[in-house]
Length: 269
Ligand SMILES: NC(=O)c1ccc[n+]([C@@H]2O[C@H](COP(=O)([O-])OP(=O)(O)OC[C@H]3O[C@@H](n4cnc5c(N)ncnc54)[C@H](OP(=O)(O)O)[C@@H]3O)[C@@H](O)[C@H]2O)c1
Image 1 (cartoon, rainbow, N blue to C red):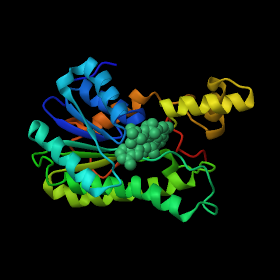
Image 2 (image 1 turned 120 degrees about the horizontal axis):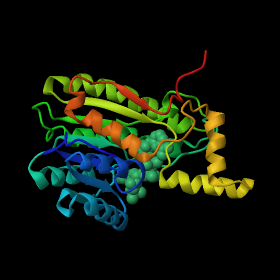
Image 3 (image 1 turned 135 degrees about the horizontal axis):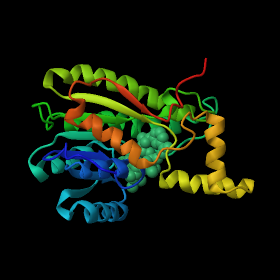
């Protein structure tokens, strides 16, 4: 993918940057010239990701920082390190989230629900509160929250992630209003079905149970979920949308949710 250098000189902090959508966002920001801190809990996976990203963009462009977004002390330390690394902070991408909890709301245990909220919704707020004192106030400051199509389309058994993602939509609106006087933009991207490592493994496992290939399982979901473009997203397509919102190309965009879902969330009349 060709990418302009519209994030040259910027420093970004991406939670959940060790794999999946977070990795693809980190890659997109690096391809556009940013220096990127990636944060996650698993040290070995994080170092491996930083090595792969650094091989493309230069080892000095990536800093892996172990952090757990469900712990305030860990988050505060990570943001302080990110700021000290290049002496500034311009972009925060709140992406880290737990895996799916495929259960109807009537059956989900309170502790499970609380933990999902704590990692994603409150985690996004924790990271934002720690980042705000460091973020640039000269127009370069931008926060991008990764929400998800479950906030906009009703997907069977995806209610837990759906209500958390709906919370991220509201969080984005309120934060955008509060941060605007500081010249910091806050937006969200809402990915649809994306061929992350996690989904590639999951669709292969489902296929194994149903006597189908992983590709057949994903094609079946395209039909059942009504994905208008007729295919799943590549992680890089999600990364590109996040990079747009982080850049000056989106300098007059704040408080918005950009659905990157192949048209899946648009109902048919
Ligand atoms: N994949 C999709 O199709 C899809 C669609 C719509 C929305 N989304 C959203 O996109 C985001 C990323 O999803 P994904 O599929 O890429 O997930 P993933 O492959 O499971 O990756 C999750 C990332 O978050 C990190 N993480 C998880 N819990 C954390 C914690 N407590 N503290 C710090 N890091 C943590 C993980 O690393 P560690 O485990 O090492 O911490 C990993 O780097 C999520 O918010 C998800 O809801 C995904």
